[in-house]
Length: 174
Image 1 (spheres, one colour):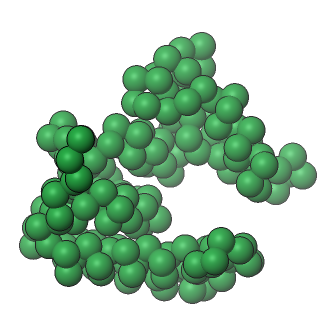
Image 2 (spheres, rainbow, N blue to C red; image 1 turned 60 degrees about the horizontal axis):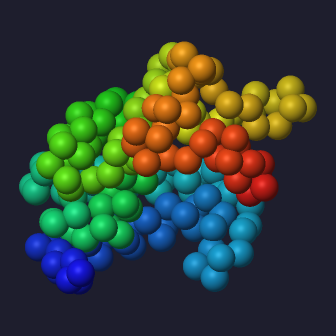
């Protein structure tokens, strides 16, 4: 198996990776793997700045997929979209869907962004990726899921593991 081709736009890739580091830092994830408290005002500032930058990149190059920026930076673009405002997420969702169809992004990324958009519209999610804490003392709770009986089958179709395993990982992290 050969190594992946270098990204067509390494400068864009570097920018997306730098922006991902800023995103994670604001959320309390440090480069050494340690966890700090999230800085919510910084998160809002970083998210707005990152969304504007990703929009500029999209306007110039289209969705930053694997061949354009490499897998890591494409992942960074997806995460930046995940943390944007709903209108931006909805625009990114269509572009990401096209990127998945062309092999430039993963079906799992599309599943997460689909669920995030649905949750932000207060609709049931499809893939069971989104949790929330409503402050009732129960901690994180799975956002409503459409047709929960077939959830694991839908998750498998996009390369996600069983819901029970995902929930266990969420609970051990948070």
